[in-house]
Image (tube, rainbow, N blue to C red):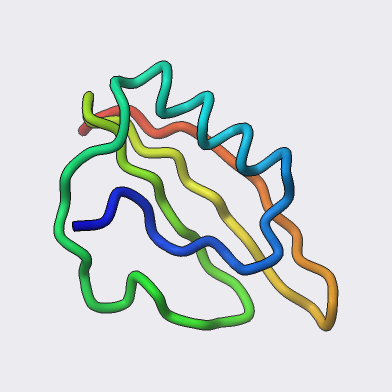
Length: 78
C-alpha cells in the first residue's frame, strides 16, 4: 500500500514540510492501493498525498530542463 504518489525527485524541503504538516493535521496517511499511473514520469502533472480523513494534498508540478515548479493545495473530501 502507498500513502502518497511519487512527487518529482527534486522535491524541496519546503514540500516535505508541507506534506508532514498536512498529514499531521488530517489523521496521518490513508491506506490505499497503488494505482497504475501513480509513478508516471512526465514534464507536468500532479501527485497527491491521501490523508486518513479523506483530504488530499495535491502537488501540481512542471519540469523544464533542470527547473521544477511546484504548487500545493488541499482538496476536501468529495
